[in-house]
Image (cartoon, rainbow, N blue to C red):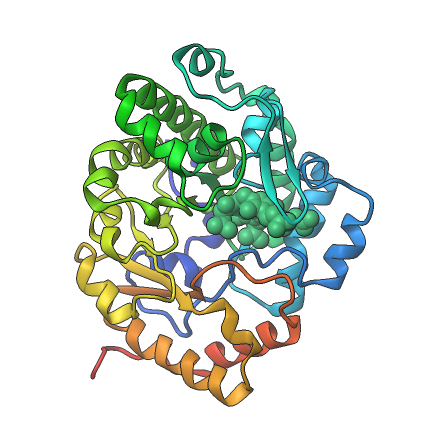
Length: 358
Ligand code: CP3
């Protein structure tokens, strides 16, 4: 098979710390990156974004490339994550939505019945050509550093479409899930198709790993997650299975559903700060790696506290087959970027523990 058609990550990145850790192989130092590493904590980001609405920035390949590279240059992290948003593919396909600063995604016409589901656009790679272009450019700029592609999980995307915007209790979402199972399944299946196809576009253009963000799944009762959500997330991962890149599954407050999330067909399970990594390792499938999980609010603590907790996260991560160091959720906008750089430096200075001891 010619190289171009062989599945797997971009060859220059195949032996990187991120990919080795995701496969459970030995690493010289732990790989580290931060969710939301490209964003408001960086002055260079605020400068580039000045006067450019969020979704417009996501649709300009030159800005996507520049913003994605900023945290790699500044912090020396072991991976870049594409600058984009979970609602970007929906926007690009023609769904009327916006990202309102300080609020989040807002949908003009919420999706709450079969007709609205059927009216959703189908995926079309031509609509996200600018993403493929940016990923291609990034792959060549990044060299041996992997680029992580991502998408929103069907449940988290559905929650925005159904509620019409951000929500604390996701009441309308859960009501639809229980009252209209046919509409629910049709909606989540549509979203799974879009997210799966969007991940494929990113990997085929040069992304070396993918992460599915199911940020709000932790708000579900485990039985509801298992029955009404997990099969759709598993379908997304199945869509990229043949591409043979590591698949990362992440959500917030997912302690009670971690075992289920780990069974979606993934190599890496993202863990927030509520579950210590050694405990998380006991809840996931043998051979899987963990990603996480320093509390993002801890960056505001004195350095000696940050250092002690970082060391503790590293120590506990050794209970899993592999460990990718990260925060337990995204970088908070007021974070001092120098603290993030210092955390990267600290993690890279530590010997990788070979086993976890209590
Ligand atoms: O991690 C990265 O650096 C990549 C960039 C990224 C963004 N959004 C950029 C962004 C990623 C991975 C996302 C995913 C995303 N978007 C999620 C899942 C991850 C998570 O945090 O749980 C969710 C739930 C969204 C929806 C969304 N988009 C929210 C809740 C917000 C915040 C709104 C606000 O202003 O507080 C956004 C906007 C957004 N997405 C920003 C960034 C950098 C901020 C917009 C800005 O800088 O003006």
